[in-house]
Length: 200
Image (cartoon, rainbow, N blue to C red; front, side):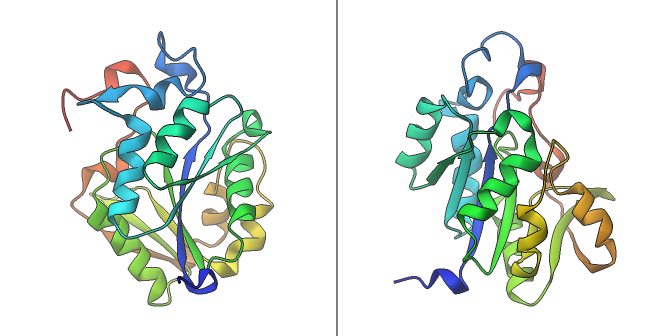
């Protein structure tokens, strides 16, 4: 049995409104349900985390039954954030509170389906090796996912609004271990339908 007090947890933020995605996103979870090569965007993002060897908890907004069903079928734990409409920071705080026994968290977004599992595994390994915060960098650009040690649990559960963890990273910039990667997926997200690649 896995000792949750020594396990890193993958956190998939999948509670956004997806308003910029346009038609087809009116249904709750619409963007993350959009299929790429027959697989929903949100499911692809979850699979990348699972392939990196992490247990994954996904946070969704109320009414996202179809997305939650698909994620659970992949072996993902799903938690519903009642106040998700208040912003990403609220969703992230909710997810951290739901997994507070973890030794750390690797946080990714549901609309970033191109991140390579090997990159996610490198972030997790950095945390296991003592990094307090770990993040990938692609050609000088900061990317996701970001890893946080358990030392930041208190600050993470206190997050509010839509800023996510950016303010926390800014405050603790000197403590970030930057992982240089050749994975363009760390800076690629899907906001609009025109962002969707022909294939992954």
